[in-house]
Amino acid sequence: MNIRGKIFRVLCLAGALGMLNGPAQAQLDLGLDTLQCHIIGFNVGPLVPSARLSQVTLAGGGTNRDATMASLYKPPYLGFGLDATYKYRSNWLVMLEGDIWFGSDNLQHRIERMDNLFSRDSIIIGTNGTDANVTCYNRGFSVQGGFGKIFPLAPEKNPNSGILARISAGYMLQQTIFMVNDVNAPQVEDDYALLYDHQRKGFLLTEGIGYWFMSNHANLVNLYIAFEVSQCWSRSTRDYTIDHYLGLQGKDNNRYFDLIYSLKLCWMFPLKGKTSHDYYFY
Image (cartoon, rainbow, N blue to C red; front, side):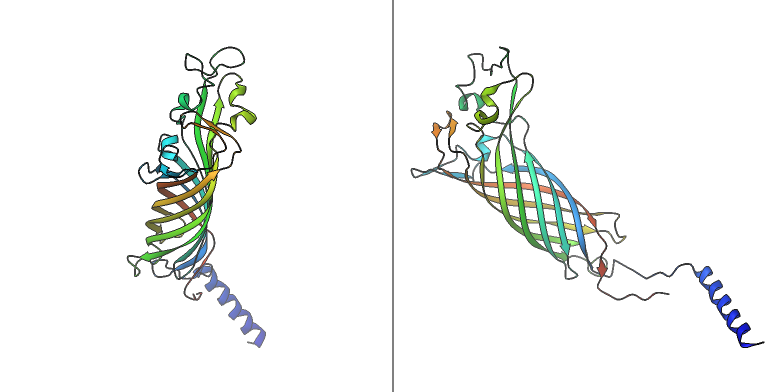
């Protein structure tokens, strides 16, 4: 047999073995390896402001609790958010998070606060002379950046899961929203609504602890649940505020501190990443 015939047979044998063995694969066991990757997450959970630990520092001196978020709006609120996380092989996390929250027709003492808008029948009269059915609720949002760390409980089985500790800081804004359900009510629309909406913005600091779970089977189940405590330092953004319940009619120069508790569940979607070891194909 000539040389060309031998080479042809070797190539045919190699091709047959490749077809029997299937495509090349890498051995990957996330139960033994830490993962480095980008992660996108969607979170949801309730928020409850503290009535006892929140307070208002009055412009004229002294403090009270009459205008904290807990006294303005009946809790709990519902929050939704989007997380963008980078996870290192060392289980350190760098996180960016945006959240929104809102209640359901939960403004407290609304008639006393806006008694100049309500009739003797305790309604806000619309342009057609009937009850405008105004819904009053709170809405807020925050943007935070921070970092965290995962402390595995069973590193020999799953080093990517364990106790989660995190801290973040950023910007927050909250206000009262008026929704007119049936007819026009110019008393609480457009620029007039700004007199009563208690809009505030400021600095937000959040600490959290929970459990971070990443499946050993790539993207099947990945989530974390965390209990968080947020401290909000804020001031009014409006040039003129009316609140007869607080005796406020003019510029709101008070400073507000709100302590907020939240329980957050986040469903995570890891993007393509790499593990801590090299793998060889067969």
